Image (cartoon, helix red, strand yellow):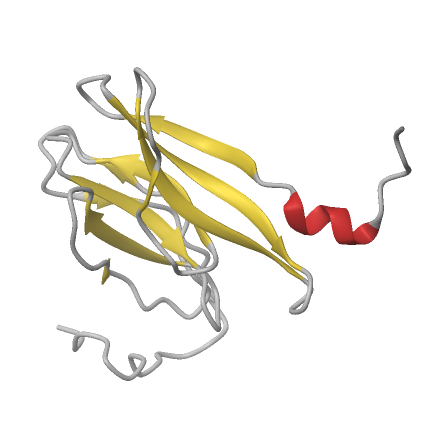
Length: 144
């Protein structure tokens, strides 16, 4: 017997989004969207799975991680993480290790794209042309 969908049922729905195939075609990083009903928000984390199938492994626990993009050598993934403010650019090794924040932009960063040689990451970012210069956020690298 079936019953109508209830609000509580949404907490059990997990939706894979934004798949990104590794350069060698053997692994996929994707965003898994779930719901946190108590906080009334969507939760997005990055997961890694072999292309041929097998167990998926959670890469991040940031809560709002999106837009994964593989480095050309397949060793790292760049992604966006929104915490208490706008999404910022992060990167992390896919075989274990901590994520590293790369930007501290007041209005956030857009989806990353690696350069072909893996030495740079391009992204878009909104700019407030009316606002004056700002001081970097605590913990941000100093400005040149």
